[in-house]
Image 1: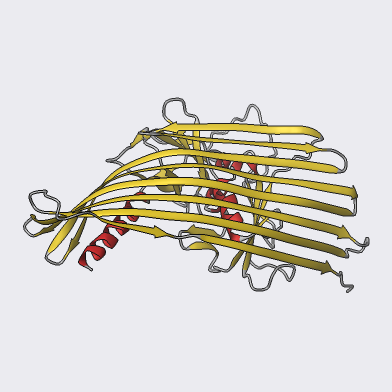
Image 2 (image 1 turned 60 degrees about the vertical axis):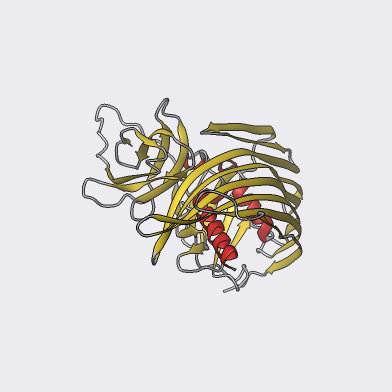
Length: 437
């Protein structure tokens, strides 16, 4: 039992270590120290000032950008009516994992009275009365982000490991192009889909009777589907290297004619990530000194595709397919010394863990929207079939050693399997009947 308890503590320590990452955070304010709400913040590579990742400040002017790689960076800030601001260069590394700016103060934009140029540009955040809209297309926040990163910047939305909230409401319905998907397919979409293929995000804090009454708020993520006739496409290749390399290719293609719209997006992941950590956990009478070396490799491919057919201006029907596959291998070698005060070594425990994780999922949706008359009567119909399969296996080897480093007996081996599969069918029909006053 003691061995098992020690092993369990060690595995929890490993989990907490793997969650560590580099963070850049701070506050943006004007010269009166008032927070700059929804200012655009960009993480720039110090070498060439290219945008690595974008973000927004919240209502109080605070921002946080999570970035997993070491390197030299600067921060740039843009805010309407103020001059563009830059920070000095800073380094993210093992000794400086969190870079915090107490306050980045903006200066008034210099006026040029000789020439005035007026340009119309849609605001990044708009208040539409019944909803708040984050306009993602062609903005800095699309750079280097996935869809789940965008939710951190959407107005009224709070995203955390505990879930997503809109205001103080935790029962949130998340739609993609107005359609509901299974939770597994939605998670795959949020984690894999590039932010550059998102048009906007609508946040509805008080949804109307059109939506399921069991949800207190609605987030509708609207993807890009080109309105231009013919073929349109985008290709992006992101490669980064710390101790190991990471490669993220993604591409999207769209074809539109008078009656047909066909689109697809493919997102790939190829990661090889290493982590070397040391953690000291104190307890009454002593402490645990843990050193861990972790390497995890992941390859994955996700697709989001669809076909829309519009035979006339009153009827539209379509099919959506969201699929994904992901293979991961995690290897951890850890040594823990159990010590009593004053730093006397009592015992040693070596732990080796190999985890293989294979995940497959698909989500297919059929939808129809018909305008039944000119007065506003409308019929919508959605059917979604989803499938999820996950095979997770952990191989554990742990070995006690004496103070002299001699192994005590044969190593203990354990294998833990966690298979999971789900099948879901979601069907929804809505009939909208206008009322006369």
